[in-house]
Image (cartoon, rainbow, N blue to C red; front, side):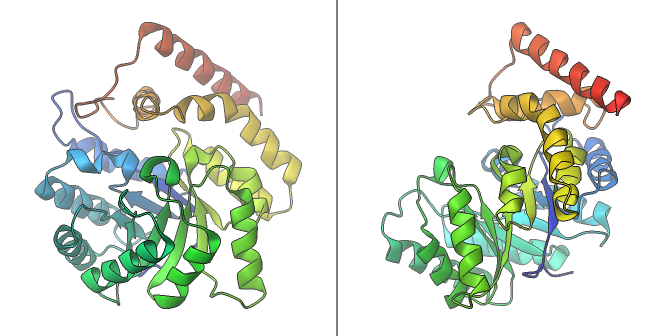
Length: 308
């Protein structure tokens, strides 16, 4: 099940579950995968920025990837983040996860890239490292990587690398970037690839309306992401925005820099999707006041769902 440029829907970004001691929690991993599939995920993405990938040893990354791929058992595509400081590590992990059944890999640019040509050359070198037959996703997340990719740069990467099948769009503000890229592909100026959006889903309804094919992000209620994408595609704009607005306070809370993953893991724990909300150190701790805020928002969401 290789990733293609027709990918659409919601590819849920999976956190990496740990037990209270910080070890990989294999039981929670299986439960989490099944919960996300039940919520309507059309794909899963692992070992991304919100998956605490830099905090994992190489053997842990591979073990986690193999478990998720095995649990999914071909029901949906699994994308694996393989960003690394050097191409040797990227190449090794890519080969192993693709052999295990991954659908493709995701690559974010390193923060030292400054010029357009440097960015384009980096992705050419990355393709050489992973192999031209491995489908890959460009991760465009300048708020974290500090690498700014203009639409023209993204189109150059797409045109020069046939194995590029998706853009994970996380620029902010970035709605006009989606419009520019979609207009270019509609007018035949660029090859069309899938565009899935991140940023915790903070702008999801508008992103899909601008031409994105869905979301690739995490949120502790992924069924909301699925519902919004489906409603927009059905032409039910009001219903989509109403659903999104009910979740917006918690979405916003989850997108806080540094704290967001701790919030998400806490909610996933309360929902019974993972057993522990442990983050690998270094990581933030939620204060009692923050926990009270989250509990209140969860109660509001769940009351609204019961009354729907």
